[in-house]
Amino acid sequence: MASDFLPLPEASIELGQSISTLRRRIKRGDVEYKRLSTPQGYQYWVKVDRLDHADHSNGQPFEPERQDLVKPVSIQKNEREFWMGLVRRLQKELDYERRRPRSFLAHILDFFRR
Image 1: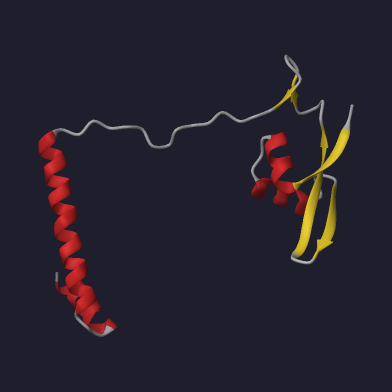
Image 2 (image 1 turned 180 degrees about the vertical axis):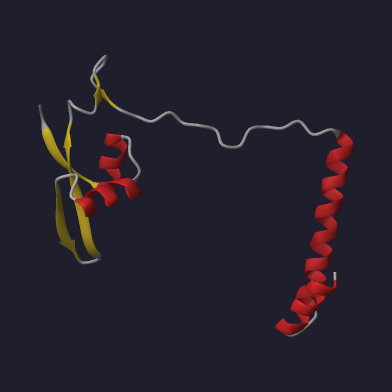
């Protein structure tokens, strides 16, 4: 079993965990690590056991599946026109508000009057 120390971003890919999770595990003492001083600050290197975290069928490192968070949505023509009109109206209001100097208090009062 080969053990290496990898920089935090590479270790997160190899282990299939986020950088934040690895930082929490370092803080708790769950993983072995080295802290190296650089001119920009400290860099953490995490110990990775290659065979423990490999896909045993082909010996490749684990890579999490990509999930599409934004799925295409079909919008009918009338809906599209409605939303585009709303966006144009909001852009006009925003341009108007940017040109008109007002105090913060005036903005708050206008918000509660609506």
